[in-house]
Image 1 (cartoon, helix red, strand yellow):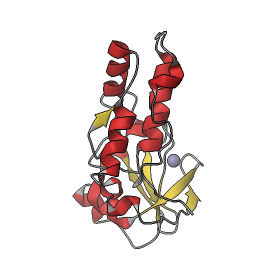
Image 2 (cartoon, rainbow, N blue to C red):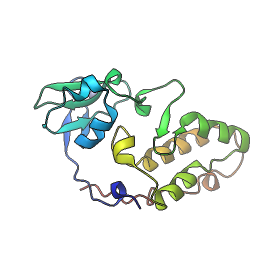
Image 3 (cartoon, rainbow, N blue to C red):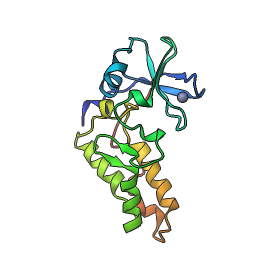
Image 4 (cartoon, rainbow, N blue to C red):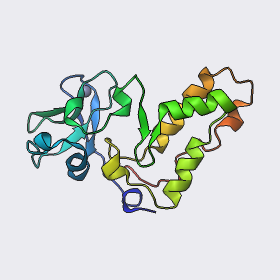
Length: 175
Ligand SMILES: [Zn+2]
């Protein structure tokens, strides 16, 4: 299992001043990898936080530094803040929401959460530098799979459709 999924991550939170919602702490390493060069140049040593509010344009913020980094400051599309394809949901293995939707449309189920879980177990994930949140995607992927399955007209047993509902393949423990 890769380092990012073994090391317990201490989670702090702070309120985003634009949307007012709480954001979780994010490692400087995550931001250095995902911000465009001009934005990295503005990065300070203050603690920074990830704003996961879908409608808020802020991706990272530091209230101490009075700094905000917006979607345009980030090299990748931030899935949680996008509604049009492609909406990335797993950055390590290049999975989009559309891939889950298409699979459900053609087969009535999705194997993607299982696939990601297997990849994570095999130590192939790098969430800390690939995912804008800096955290494992499995919880989010599973949530999206369940939401899309509920929405589909499939008559198959929903319980069987998502074989891996719990993101226990990635042992990031939040304290
Ligand atoms: Zn916000």
